[in-house]
Length: 267
Image (cartoon, rainbow, N blue to C red):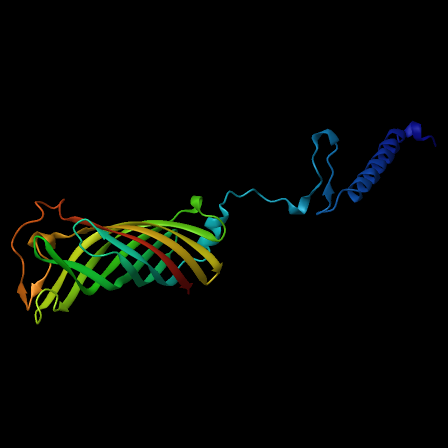
């Protein structure tokens, strides 16, 4: 019986062609690159290297120092510092060495909260017994402050952090000495002022929990006690001559420049 007669020839031809196409498809699938193999760039003129497909990942925009700092937020930093205080303006106090402690909390984000105290252990205050007669008495000049520090990732690099900030402070004067002008007399000065400050600080990471830094600060004080004309009491009695040295709040302003080195331990 003829296949042509029954019209089976076209059917067999299509079947054979389909089998051949299926075999070619299986062969092509078996030859496809496996995951993680190199994708070859055909056009050598592009100058591109082969790239492992498994190593491809979306490009993320991040700052390395920002990422390093924020992954260790909510840390407590305890710092001991030493430096120099240089009073000027209405503060007749000699520049001297200062020491102090600071407790800082690095909160989430780029903020640090600073609570600290410092003092000049050996302070000398100028006092006057007349227009042309002045002496120094010894005592303690100390300060306590709260500040807000802001971390700047753009000015920081790996291991070196840049901070800047501001805050408010309370300044205390406790001076007392005998036999300054007259033998047997005790000369005292005790008072307080409020003030504010701005600062910049660079901290270098020696290891993760140990940092060392340099800080520069400018304090401004409302030294209104200088309106009394003299800074001291004699045997508990005010020695003021009631002569105003100042004529308003701007004349009462005084400053303390501070340069110091911080040694910090982080928890």
